[in-house]
Amino acid sequence: DVKVTQSSRYLVKRTGEKVFLECVQDMDHENMFWYRQDPGLGLRLIYFSYDVKMKEKGDIPEGYSVSREKKERFSLILESASTNQTSMYLCASSGPLMAGVNYGYTFGSGTRLTVV
Amino acid sequence: SQQGEEDPQALSIQEGENATMNCSYKTSINNLQWYRQNSGRGLVHLILIRSNEREKHSGRLRVTLDTSKKSSSLLITASRAADTASYFCATETAPGTYKYIFGTGTRLKVLA
Image 1 (cartoon, rainbow over the protein chains, first blue to last red):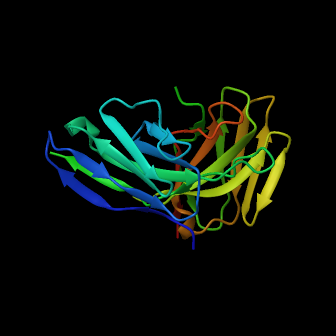
Image 2: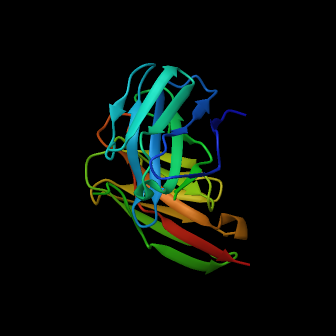
């Protein structure tokens, strides 16, 4: 069964810590994404990547960075965690267009990060 | 601002009833997708409807798309307690990109 795996379901970190959220997909997808989800705000795109070593900012990149050294792995990094980064983080991947259509994302189960 | 906005925000129905959720969006689209999210989990892709389609079925799901009104609806027939979840519509930020914008979702509760 194809999947996107996020390394942790729950994570508690202290303010100022450097935090790594890992995401691995086994579908050989080119495209990978990091979203955060907050009540009332829906999903907001943080960063995405169309290829290895390639990254583009989403709508809310401040305070985050990413790394994609291998096709299957896309890491989200919180350089110095703050309490306003407490959230659910969702990783997703998608494959190439087929007949001009992107047939949707496969999401991981999410990481609920609490920064104290 | 959100590309897709779902309506209602929350919906509570009895098992066996039909549930209808609506989505409005703002720009031209190539396709629109619906996702389900069970509490505390990731989203699961349900169905995709292309801009040249008006209606699509998948099991107990029926999706309609009205591009003139920039709106879509998701109908779940004969609902079950297991359908309790949040439902999101998603549209591309621009046609041909891989980036999707999600609405804030409709929380559906199906009472047994």
